[in-house]
Image (cartoon, rainbow, N blue to C red; front, side):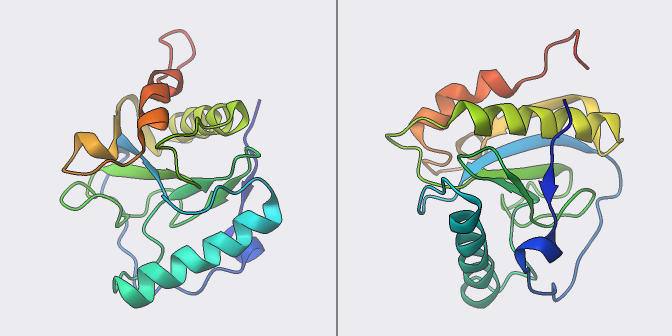
Amino acid sequence: MAVNVVSRAQWGALTPHHKDNLKSPAKRVIIHHTAMKNCKTRTESIKELRIIQKLHMQNRHFDDIGYNFLVGEDGIVYEGRGWGVMGAHTKGNNHDSLGVAFMGNFNNESPSSEALTSVKQLLKAGVTQGFLVPEFLLFGHRDMGDTACPGAKLYTALPLLRPSKKNC
């Protein structure tokens, strides 16, 4: 089952100031949560995406939204920086990784099965298309530094995103 990704043009992304491409397929996937509003519909997600992008570009002085992809609770995946582009999601770890953010706060609420399934399909597509190495490593943001991200409930769900040997 293929994953449908809403393009930057479809959600009205601002033009990035600059972008650097990854030098090779990503070796790691780092999972985040936005720690903002949980988005249950496409309309809510698009509104939140625009807020996040402006926050990242104006307040944090990033060149673009920090994540490569974001997913709403309805399972819809949104293109952030996209495939093959260096993100700004995990300081010191962006050169060989893909940053995927679940839209919402998952400290006390579990991510939806739709969102988890879509991210798993996205990662499979990344391997198939050559943007992710088949033996990629998967981490929560907290594994890379002093943060609670991606929230306790999402962190415990990370094993559900790991590819099974027979599927990749």
